Amino acid sequence: DGGITQSPKYLFRKEGQNVTLSCEQNLNHDAMYWYRQDPGQGLRLIYYSQIVNDFQKGDIAEGYSVSREKKESFPLTVTSAQKNPTAFYLCASRDLVSQPQHFGDGTRLSIL
Amino acid sequence: AQSVTQPDIHITVSEGASLELRCNYSYGATPYLFWYVQSPGQGLQLLLKYFSGDTLVQGIKGFEAEFKRSQSSFNLRKPSVHWSDAAEYFCAVATDSGGYQKVTFGTGTKLQVIP
Image (cartoon, rainbow over all chains, first blue to last red; front, side):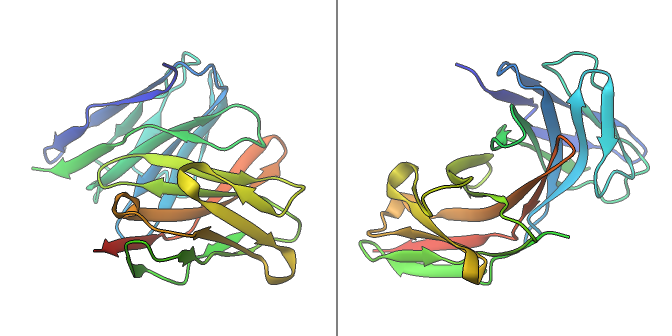
């Protein structure tokens, strides 16, 4: 089945540590997105990428980094500069600009 | 700038009762409109979408939504709620900005279904 796979489902970060969240899609979608979800705040855009080797900052990019070396993969690194990383992270992708985004099942990141 | 308002943070309905979740948006032109549903610890699942044409759109799981341009609203409805509908619902507005799809999500409405 085509879809978006996020891993791991749960992740724990120690102080001063960088962690990387994986997002893989086999939908052949060009555009991919990373969102952060906090209770009562909806989804906020961290980074997005419309094509391979290109990505743009979203509304809350500080403390995060991404890469897009392959069409199907868009990993997100939460760096030690992100002082409040505890959240639910969602990856999404879409085909045409008029089409809805498809979402993975998310990764919950917590601080040890 | 586009914005989405879901005025109800929590809604409780009895099983079998009808449901309406409100969504108001702010945007100069007609945007693309979506409703998503999220179960705890899961990603978002698309319920339905509106791009143009018929203002009443049908979605999955028996949901429908009506686009009302004059009220800038896109309310979600279901005639008879099932216990399995308990979840959080998000309205979203998407616009095309030079090939980039900018999506704004509402803050969500949590639906509780009681027997």
